[in-house]
Image: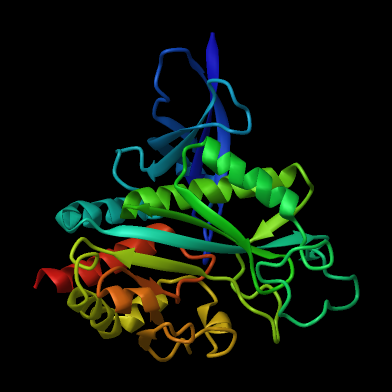
Length: 333
């Protein structure tokens, strides 16, 4: 007897990587082995030297196929077993190990937009829906589109053992969000990638696509982000470390902005609950700031911060690495 392992990896497409996957039939009792693929077809190798390596890093039950089948999140290696240039997980792993004693935790809010026939789901052909306002956390067939896909995706994430902690309809019609966490830097990023794969896969069942475009519709419409909640053990026990983390992010604002997803200047305009991408700010309960300190955190004098800058299309390995390195370095001083 055998089982199916769906190998999932991140390709070399720029400026925003895409997910790829393929199936391997594995003998019962055997672990998913190291495998390979044609990197010349994924923007990761030339045709004359096209072999790339898939190294399993996390295995989850496959909620789509069921039974003993699994999803295998992989990192991409070169044939000499060193990280491929497109492999951002390796650097994240090194930073996570360096600062593991500070116990960094993440909760990532992944926004996305459903598309049908090239338009946001629910939008009338040749026109626009009513203004934003009723769609956020709305209910009813005149306000909500795509809930059947969302429900299937949520159940799939739960059955896969992902740390999914919630979902909600977002501000623009056809836009939704799911949250992963709390989890460590690597675990949160691994699970965001797998949850994205499951979102696309569930959409296939309904002939509905999902996009992580940070500004899927130009004009007076909300963009899509990946607000990233962060804390360390010290932050969860006191308020001074929270301010230290915010000041550290301020000092390296340019580095973070450059690595928080392609097209960030289109989304972070200073409108639609964003701070301008050219400026850094933080404040209590301020969704127009770069980094928000929740009001309850100020009351309790401990907790977490929310970096509101990452785009929906960000690489979570890069985001969790940068935040961990920036904040934990400052907190270690």
